[in-house]
Image 1 (cartoon, helix red, strand yellow):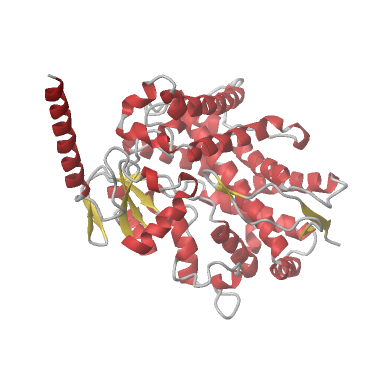
Image 2: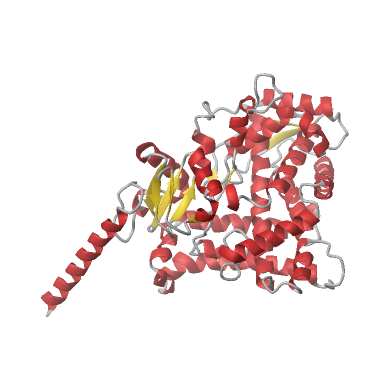
Length: 493
């Protein structure tokens, strides 16, 4: 009897292995996976984006990595554009699987990780509300400028700037724009512990995910998260961490709606969404929470991190900083605010912001896509319901357009006349992704980057401290964070 059982199990295993490798043949060629685990043993999750770039050297611009389900990776800009823009509907799906579902209050909720009709409804509603509040227009810019003035006042209030980490003031500056837009209130700089706790918790969640390869196993084996001990290690611990963030978002939405009457004119996104809920059955409270969480977490941490990297790159590239400041002073002088009216007169400053985005390259891996039908990219067939990674990080770090990509050189975005932008270089700068799933908050983020960066250099010179050189090696979490470190901040005379 024992031998019969063993024979049956070995036969079943043999059939599974045969079927597994027959299935592998359906996908673009990549590193050879092993049954059950795929390529999990051969990748380092903390630096997965670098692993994928190395695989691209061997397997080309379209290949498959198994994590443990098949993920088709696209590393060429034109092919990513073909997939996500020209064939956007074919690639518009999301995984609807853990760990992506960690960021949803309700199944298929919100904007970032949802798909299908609900994604279209939530995105359309959210963008319409933001446009009503002036996204990309003067009203939204005015909010950013007001927050920048608070930032400037706080910076001026700090007496000793000889060794200053800019994370806290930049984080509050950006978060206050987002908070005011979403909830209608902002934080005082000296009463921002709650805000910083949310940011720290969010980064801790990504840190926990990057440390644990097993986090991907529930995609293939949904039952594993229910196992004692193992299930908590894979899913339960990180869900507990995320629940604290969700609770804070819920409290902020409740605060915003506490005294709001839907008959009144809304003053923020939460109120405007709630007002639309009264007449649109496709909108509900759980999606409201999810939309607010999406915009808060995505909008706050990415822009904050980019500006933090900007301060480090300016500290290590004094000639660039001096040239940017010279342009700022020639256009704005010491006192005028950096409104959009002046952008076209500041090409070198804009090119420097672009180069900060390219070099910081903070999104190691964009949110995963899923094919909604059998499709192809660059004549390579991809089956329906395949997870897809458009490796934007690789494009900005390795595209032939950026032929000396390791150097910080804003001039790459300008033609020889110093004023006309290099169309090819600017097109392939895609930190907000490409196509139908492109970041909905891109317009606001670019206003924040321009106003924040110009305000900082208009009023302060940034240098390394005498005791410690600038460290440009990132911390590898969900986004590539700069290490906490002091800088010497000197007021511009």
